[in-house]
Length: 216
Image (cartoon, rainbow, N blue to C red; front, side, top):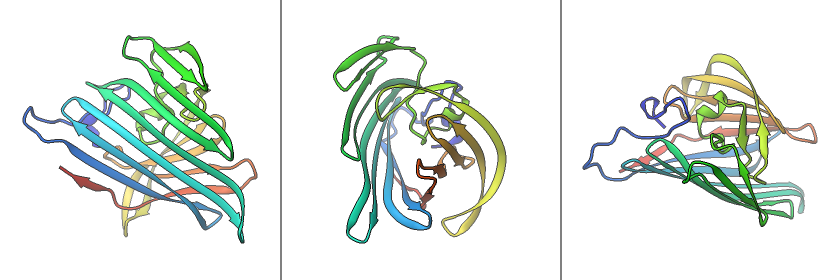
């Protein structure tokens, strides 16, 4: 995620020449609840010319001794082409409740199929996945969990210094109020470097970033 890749509509595009080879960025997070690690989140960005494929996997298990109190598993993929959101699909197991969502914006309007039911939604929606800093510029988004319309209220908290990968970086902090209240931080390249939310039981969930890996 580089600064020059984003347009106002929420675009992730590399400035690639016609002969450039595909490139991949991998961003990994440890998910921590009240100081205890409970899961992982991995974001892979595959860039090939004007196309970007985003693959996200999240795995969470909250346990006491050998008893699992809560489990969340999700895989999601997004396709962006020439700076435009094209499609999304996700499969989510939210503590035993299954959701399957697909969205197609290739014809201009957004067609969303969620748990077997298809509906039309505003064509300018983007997925609610946090990797894209332009989410902080939206007033609504498409839920990657159940395909619903999420209203978003955003507060810009300014720039803060964060310890990431053994060094201090300047990160822009936003508070997002929707189904849950979330705080997100992006570095000056547009990379997500931290996320924090308050769970329904009042616990604090923190996404802690490892240094990104790049290839290609």
